[in-house]
Length: 420
Image (tube, rainbow, N blue to C red; front, top):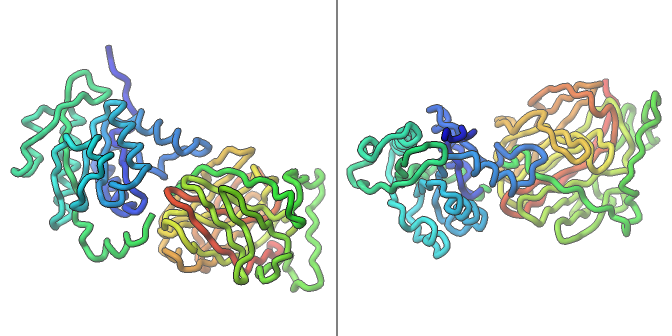
């Protein structure tokens, strides 16, 4: 009977702290026509993170395990490897550090032959990995697979790839050992999609009923045909609709703490901390006003957590489950998303930009809304322009998404001006 054609050739499993390396592996394989599934890029909008990982494994023929001290001790990586073994998916461990296997990891992959790639140049190891995978995907035999291995790695393991009728070979190799390159080390230091992310799964915050400044979850829409109230208080300059430098703890933003999140004013900034991994949270300010065509500016920085954690601003929010958000992460990527009745839609996938400060350095985010057009900028440089007609007005807010570890972002100097 004909086997089904799977959507992906390789599932890449890695610790978020090795994302630079994993992305390099992914880019190299895809340049050779090898279809990869990698988180957070391929996590579909609205799909819970764990479910997306299982779907990715089910639709992949091989797993490439980027093995390092980070992945060796990562509960998430261990779960992915266990699932691959349980599903009979061949695993190709890529050793980038000379680390003794943890007991759990040893149980799953100790029978594999390890091809160390701890020497330069990096490119030669990446080339060998892609050659090996292509041989396996093409249904190569043991002899043809051995041709792409170095002389010191004669051992291969047999396995059946899930959409082939005949047994194929698992070559156990490790590719990317050149992480020792100083420049890469500096990039990786402290690193953690994202949802990338793409986008990461997000969970609405509970109503802060005990907080006097928080209103109910129900946010009324503007009456049909009426322009949202945009009267300017006397304290604001001409054209400015709202501003907050977060020095006043009673200025109207939620303050609360629960098992998943903390939100509070801190040292003249607004702090939003997400305590769970693979979690997202946000605060929509119902007291700031409802705005249509605006120019919004805010300073934001990642205070703690993996650099693939994303953070940013919410705008045109209808309620806690419907809004637009402009996110950036500590790796210099940005995304534009729409959450509509709890379902996340990607309007612009996570994209690299040299205009975004990486790491824990502050960024100045800007959003211009003019009718259906949305223009996003960072540090004075336009990143993207899209059009979407779902929400014509709404409230503003802030957001943080995590991947493997908790993350905290701080926000300051929020200003909303009337659109030109």
